[in-house]
Length: 151
Image 1 (cartoon, rainbow, N blue to C red):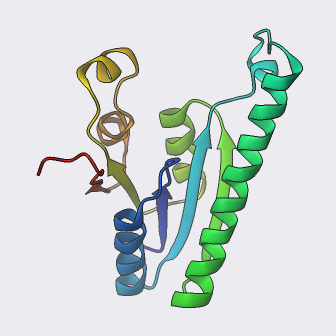
Image 2: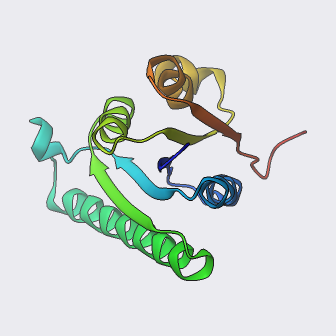
C-alpha cells in the first residue's frame, strides 16, 4: 500500500517519529525517505549574507544536519533492514517537502507535531498544519513530546 514513505525530519531529536516510520515501513515493506528541509543560504535567495562568520556558521550547521541525517539513515538500514535514503534540501519548508514527496512518488508523509507558543504560530505558522492542508496523499501526524510538556 505504501511503497515510499517520506519522513519529515526537523532539527530536533525525534525518536517517536522515527519509531513510527520504522513500524510503518516494516508493516508495508516500504522504503523510507528521511527529508530535512533547511533554510536557503542568504546568497541563494538574494539577501546580503552578512559577515563571513555568519556564512561559515551556517555552512557548519548545514554540514552537521546532513551528517546527522546520513547517520540516521545508515542506522535504520543496518539495525532494521529497511531501505532508507536521506535528503537534505534547502528551500521553503512546506513547498519543498511537498514537491519532494511528489517527485519521489511518496504514498505517505510522516511528520511530527510540536506545540509552539501563540507568538510562534502567529509569526511563523505551523508547518504540520500547512502540510496536512495541502498534501494530496495521506499524512501521519506524530505528537512530539518535549521535556516541558505538562501532559
